[in-house]
Image 1 (cartoon, rainbow over the protein chains, first blue to last red):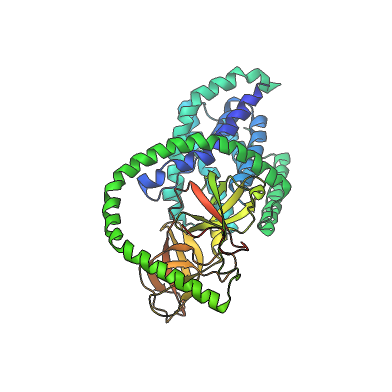
Image 2: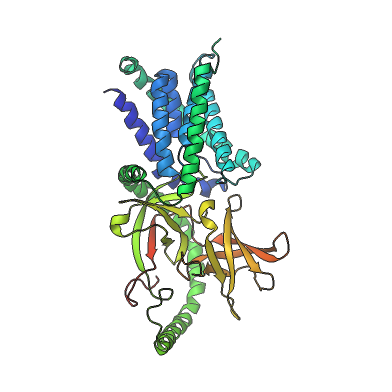
Length: 171
Length: 292
């Protein structure tokens, strides 16, 4: 029952990404930059760090497919990239001491990986036709910045929420 | 030391890769059709999106207003200049409309679908793809409201923004003209002041410059900067006379056989709130919309 809190939070972030974030005038302020808000993905990684991996992977598949259906025209890409990246970042996190700074760094790495994977797959099937320099400069860097900022905001409240409902997750 | 991939995990990874490729090829082949599961999920999420987007639009509208106040002075100056021509243009327009009507009646060309008026459905934007790869927006009208796949979507002033690609029951997805999957189907034209219209195809969008590519223009055609490009109505998908944009640059293509022009889209694709969906199959002329 307590797990539903996580689901509701993820769904809320998922909706925010598609409705509120495109309204923010990034393109007016800085010209060509394309920051992509991957808030659901940030929350998924934090869940795998402080909650449990299996729960996080399950939600990664669910919300990956939701993204594919609602915000894109090709099925499966987001579900696959989310699942693989959450698993890899979680594997990396076992080797480091998880404090706030390290978490932000790992999340940024995860964002970097997931963006690159999606860019790669979309380029292969001919949807993304962006120069790689343009991708790095105007797409990847602002995206990492935006999501790192969001990670800092979410880190303490979300960690506390996960610790509070930790018993429910383990069962 | 934990290894990244044990045998079992490698098998899972490979299986999911196969599933991914199968899904991708399935959805590429599927095109505009969508299964009932997709439509159901799209409609359910659409309901939630609607709830979230209403207060968000209010807030955004406020900031937009503040921006508009800043711009108002310069716009006012520009508009005053345009206003001087307005009276004469309107008179001319009225004359031409009357003339057109008479001539049409003369040759008995009433129910030609290419020339008849169209039906308009107004819709509100409730969601948008947040990654830059997919240029899709979700609108709050669907099959129950009469929306069908392939209908052109415009914003005020008959400026083309895209077409409906996946109509659900209560919401539909619109693929913008900046989406590369959509653009290769727009047949467009330029109406020069003198002479016959110049036809070409709109073939893609350059994200780094924010311009559309207008290709396959005959090499002898006189194309210049500042000319307005509209849809030609030849492809059957888009109604005639929707404004696509203005030409910013003209070059010859790599073989020197045709000309290529870059077009700045007329509609501001980053700030869309209310859109109009056109149904070109309107039967009776006289009813429906008469432009803006």
